[in-house]
Image 1 (cartoon, rainbow, N blue to C red):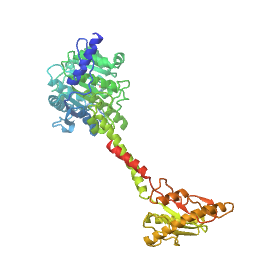
Image 2 (cartoon, protein in one colour):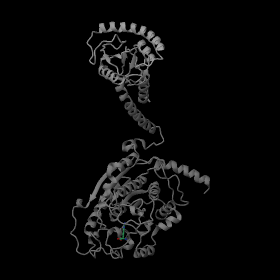
Image 3 (cartoon, rainbow, N blue to C red):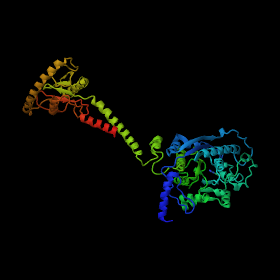
Image 4 (cartoon, rainbow, N blue to C red):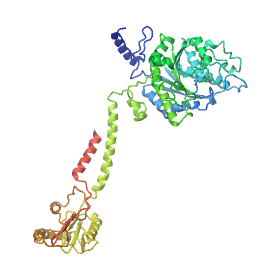
Length: 581
Ligand SMILES: NC(=[NH2+])NCCC[C@H](N)C(=O)O
């Protein structure tokens, strides 16, 4: 096939995959291209929990379904792919109607339970397969395959193609198994070729007498084998069962493996596919929480690829994930294994590995909203929302304390000090009286000021008046009287300023006691506009101290806790921009 043709076919397949979920052409040439699609065709998905551990001895695989379902992530992610879910709940041993009494001697441990459980499981699988396009079975140990494959094979007319992804061959017969564990036997129990080796009427196997051989060894392909017992090896070779062990996977690569496997067991894609995935097929690094981990297995990505390619055939009807044991390993191990199981299941549901990480921080809801069109405009507002929320938070963080400080806006003005270190402290607002008192005290202490006058003021449009000889408590003079004093003081002040300058020049040479430095600029500014908040913030009681000439002196004392009006404007503006961005 020419490159041109392959390209065309690839484009056609990518398009058809989007419409029909079928993008893999088998048969002559067996081209696989465009098998991934960003938007899988919506379908109904049935979920069955196989809460079962009777196929082996360890406690825990019966908690597998709960662990995989936990938190509702899997369900939400499947819905996000556009599928509908029908959950058939978990099948537990306790739910079974008539468990037969335990057999004293049998070649399969717990066979009395396994017989009833697998029969019921087969029924549930049949129901789900009838009602849904895809069935997901959450194991459970691998013995549940007896029930699931039986149920699946019963519903199809053609042969069923079984892809068995496992480190183990699970092909022991009740006679050859050393453990007697059914999870090491499902293949022999299901395949017709083994019937001459297994008599279900003998050896305490009666509870499984209902089990028909539903598949043939030629319908089966193994992927991932690396822990095969000697007798199992003989059986595999003797029956010519298709197997891709770890060595062949390393030789030809997993994509080629799944391509070849499907081509061999389902060449025309007529058969339904049953994908049975034991988590121990993966390296323990990816799936540590399992009963019989074996080193050197598949990577999670390889198993995902197996699920993707199989799903892309459009023939995958059932995927089961087995042997996940949440009681094995640390909570990190369990988390890792569960995540791996979920990722494989989602791949089987048509999830496209196009860059969005499934366990994203957007949460399940946002994820389900944004998943389907990851590159569309739909996603953009999501990110905008996030940044807007952040901006709101920032604005509140800055504005609230800023406004608190702004409430304190005002000045304490000390004026009319003199050579005798007598100072008046005039608060511009009655709220600042306590601070004014404080300021006065500080002046007294630090600068050896003998007399502090603190005036009260109702209006803050004030310039200090003639000092009143009240020590630390505010006077109760009326506002009119205060205003008159202020005016008087203002006139006096201007005259004094001129005189002061002269005096200072004259007395520059003489050593003088400590004086308070006049903050001329501030004073002038204050006189011009006494209500104006200052843009700086200062809690100094006095601006400076200087050995200076004698004479009356005036100083400003700041208890400025203000944000400048322009600063406020910037903050409010930022806030509004963030809100309406
Ligand atoms: N699916 C499995 N984990 N199987 C383990 C089988 C182990 C062993 N071969 C047995 O027959 O007991």
